[in-house]
Image 1 (cartoon, rainbow over the protein chains, first blue to last red):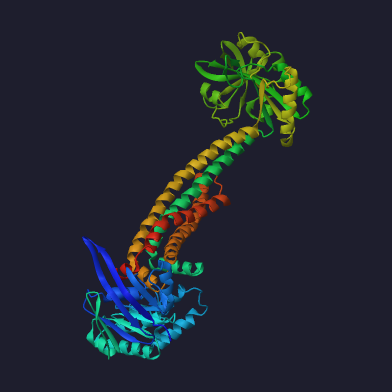
Image 2 (image 1 turned 120 degrees about the vertical axis):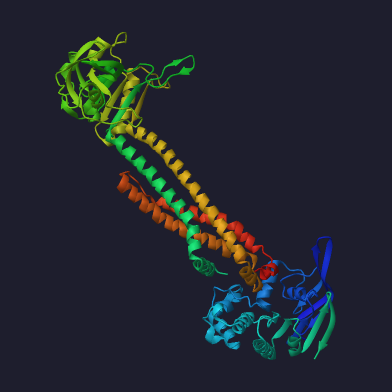
Length: 228
Length: 409
């Protein structure tokens, strides 16, 4: 049997604060299989951002074990985490986070610049990723010349381009109007239908309705884990 | 990431802020430019001094008498009289590499002409003095052999002495003047020759036969002693040969046993040139060091702007880290940007320096020499400045926390 994409075992994350320590995660255990479409939900301060940062290897847990695709990644160095992010994780952000001086195509090429070994056919791969999100025609545009929805499509193409095991989307519709947000959700659903694991962090119940599984956090613990 | 790609990225980032990049470069441009100009002026000064020294007659040897020692106190050259007119005659006779030989004894005297007077160095010498020096007269004649033999009361004036004793343009050949109350007839005026490399005015001198000096001006001094001997070699290649012959001959004549130090010193003009070269070299490096300070200031300018740039681009750094940039990738990106600024500034500064050096040469008439090594030095230096001053901002960028960086506005 294939190992789960994500396996958290009693994961803790604390931050040193004035007058002690604040725990953002207080022993979270969860298992997400390959091909799932998951929303992590909860009010602000519930620990969902921390959970995403750890799942995305932007941060390490203070305690507990995190296995990504069966590999223990709880205590890796900064550079090791950077390499795994590059190969296995694609990020989609609320504010798109495209480099403003680079065209859509160049933004999509960005993860490949840090891939070891180097890809010989960066341009073709980036174009293919843009085609997948319906943005091929706007490859040469700067982000400022694109609408919010188009920028988020380019950002999704960037997240896809290194063929990651997992896409982590942090409020991907937060900066978009309802209709464009729905389009982006449809795009993500389509990608999930092609077998890509997608985890969305959101507090928007409508987004939550669009996915199969909802994990609700409160005060650093999982409150609800339901499959629609 | 490959170095070529990093370079391309750096160029794009710098081109995005053209004015800022150019202003940052300006410090390096001025710094490198002034280093190159200063070195080229220094080298040019050295070359023109060397040229002056060799215009004195590159085949020349100077022989000074030895040093005196008294109770451990050693005085300078010429303080112990050891050279005689007979040595001069022997050199002329027995050194085949020597072409002309002259000698001189120097006294400072007050010279009186009519109502004016002037203190000058009086050289007691022979007819061959101007031949060895290759020193032309502007009027009249130099000493003749018979005047030297007869200890005639005749004098030849240096250009500066002439100016100080007579009205400009005054006809003085045949006129009389007094040195130490002894009357002399003026028979010639030398053309101006300028100063020696050590700053002595060669024109502030008068020349009389050494025989006349010995008999009528010298007072108590031993007859036949000379202050220094000048020898011109047959050719430039024979200078060293002539030096060896003179040294051998003088040791023999002065009866110096092997192992005993010479009681005289032989200097070639090449040695003088080497000494002068050392001085101007020191000057050159001093000038370059002053110019290098502006390079330092330029480097600090780079650091300043790179720090601003790191802060401004914090979010970009966060994005790059999120998609997999390692610490070293970010470090290199900013380091290369700093290096591109300083190297490009270095290249522009080199162009500026070379063209200003040529402009100075044309406008001020100074000799300037631009050499490849100073350009190479400037280029390497600018790259080093880039690495040195770019490192701190680059490290700051690479140490950013990706989560914090992504949140940055």
